[in-house]
Length: 550
Image (cartoon, rainbow, N blue to C red; front, side, top):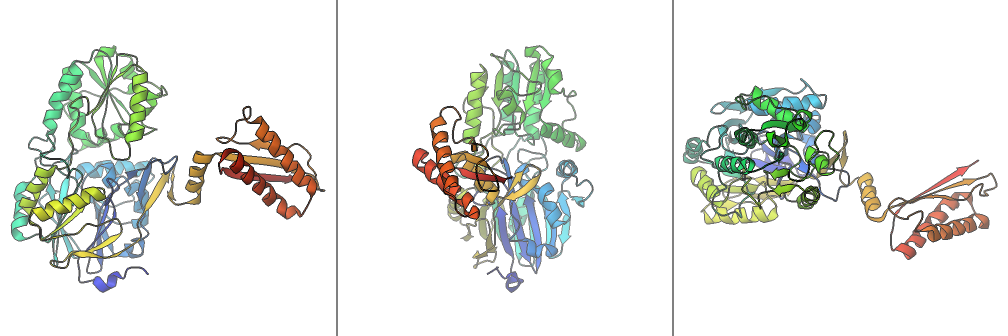
């Protein structure tokens, strides 16, 4: 039975539909007095369970019956796992979108690429101002992260104030943008905060996450020591890191070339918002290849092993412009998102096979996290002092550990939610009181597909067991007019398995000669194939029987 929200109109509720019990694909909902507020709407990376799929977005089924009461979508920042799903799912929502100028610039470009230019009402917001939305009043609070204009969101209601941190860290020298506004965070703590919904990504990391300025210093030294071509891959949206790579390259006497559509998109949005202004014009990949090897640095997409990104194409020697040769260096200035380890490792191996030097965060100081380590979490709790801790943005183990830490820091109540949980935010009564449908939609080319769809189930089966098709041409008397024609990609080899094909052909011909009801013929042949392949190969491939009657 669907959860009855109307029975809780006088309570402040929190409903995550993405980003809780996982890292990525953030979607958070707040409900009060019959109205809804959405915070972030991001993508996640797919794993091998979804063949042919790189990106997933949250399933909205549990919320769509209430979308008429949605007052707006607030974006904390421009990372893909917080805004990447907007172009795919906004048409279902149709609500205003609130974002800072840089985030708004990037979103407009992404919306235009999906044919939605000018469709969404995008309202630019700034720190220090109140934005009333029905029973909610919002204030954006600057906080450091690995992208410009990251903001926590203070959500004030008559039932109490929620501090929704989004992604954050406490970096005293973030290079781009201001430091975290600890004064405002402390002011909210003094006024009283009911609940803090907080990032859990690095809860197991002791100490502090490190400063972006330290990474810049290290990258300058690493690139300076490289003798041939340099390729740096990082998250396209990490503008501070892009700036660090650019300055490191320029300091080493190299021009900078960009490879990857998302990089050009982010750079354009950043420059429009006033960032990356004092740098020379960027070269494209073809222009970069014309320079001497020791006079160019490429910045490429693909740090997570995405198959269609620039670096994957370089590793496969399939990039239209960039060809690397032994002695060149590839630098991974990023962390590995959980679940991507295998495909990133596979790409590392291919790069090494090409004779390239590969440097990552294990072999060199190339990255600091944009998320808070334990000392920073402790500092945040000291500033905000919430009555209720609601850990999000982490796998189950992260959320569990975060709740333990909050308890150690004297937070009165903790709730450990999951995607689809309905959480009551009330002092002394904070708890999960129900659940709604949650899940994933796969971005399959230009369409969205349920991850449990028959199409994806069939893809998995073909990947694991192969495919076998047989075509038969019969006359009016149900006699074969030609030998059975087989096709068995991923299942049988035409040369190595000739004996199996011959045996199948004989058994099919025997079934047809035996006669029987025409309408049962296809089923009989399918049963034969299923049994024979199970006995011969121990496999259950996808089967397809074509009967052509002339």
